[in-house]
Length: 546
Picture 1 (cartoon, rainbow, N blue to C red):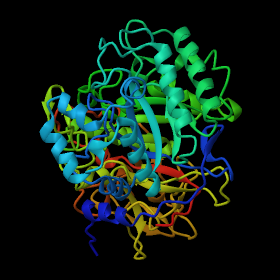
Picture 2 (cartoon, helix red, strand yellow):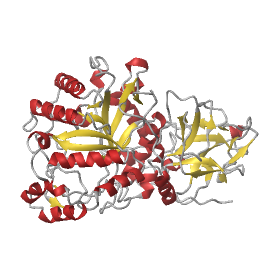
Picture 3 (spheres, helix red, strand yellow):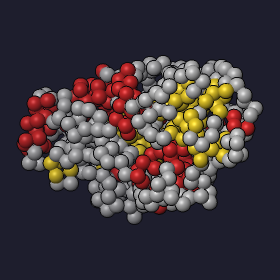
């Protein structure tokens, strides 16, 4: 029986997503962020909500009522927000009225739209408006990391914009510390504020390891004294892409088990985006992950008490037209993020801006929401984030370890339909759980005597009890370790798991493509599609409730 599965259906199922309950505040335990009271893992799956531009107001209030925006965040499957702000909003413009700021920028028509959807906001001061956004997020159960994005309000980030590093034209360290401390004290009784980002994407010719250490330590201590409840997110240098200097000499304090390192990753991080289509993808994905681990992600792989949680504070691709390079990047990132059950934040939530780059009403192609903030921009893309939004590992869990079989190109997980077949479907409670002992072992359906069987090139994958047969033994055969292959019975040749199309749920085995030495047709617009054959066995010890 052929079962058709449409990604829009998977997105609509997100609307039923219940948020797991936990108490606040949060702390860290080795590589995990945990509930301070119970020690249970709390997974951060966040959306970036910008508010640090010249208007000094979280975006979107001219297009939807505030409660609607927060409700949309939940419907999209996010449980937290990385809410950005500018230091000057706190230190120089805290008492300025929102409406007057918009008038001063020549944005009277935008102010009128804010008044239509959120009539109280235009009469508020900037800090009062920021409070109102935080309060609504708290009312709807959304956690918040308030992120210091810039000092002077503007779009971030350029190499020489005066906001990049301590001592730059607009980046006075004393004023920065004052702004952090004021907000830390202000929100000590707002439990939804679970963390504070010290500074977004430090960069520029002034940057140095010693200066970074000095001010991160000063800021961390100041925040922890003012508000011992919040996590402290510390991003690295070079646009939050380098923390490797901490390998030899870690920070001297974790601020009472509150320290979380932050890094950012885009298709254009550490090289031009075009490499994602111009180089062999299996090798490139492996190399990019290894490079990222070496530069930042080593912090959570150290093991034991040396580990510090890593928060990928920005990751994203355009949702309006997904380029092949962006598509390949996201498939690679999703496998690694799901495998390690990372805490992360999507860039971005916003469908557009009040004012950016001297343009009024600018669209945001990276936005999860549409231009009018009333619907998802790309449900197919959001479905690919689904497994990354779920908590898959919990160090306190008593559930036995198993694996989900994840297809990152579509965001789906494999499901047994009780007809001795598997198909691709929504990641969550219905996803089948598998057991796998490593290369050359069968992929067993947990709690049964059945395993996956490769029937041959172009044959739908079946379940069988003949788990010692050659076609039931699976290897990870590519340099990315993302091609799962078994030997075809008649020819003795490897065939790989393959998802033919996003518009059908069928899973076949087909001739393996784009392995080492066989990259012809795999790059620069070639017909072969390696990511159709990318499947990741993702470890989990959590039972899903949705």
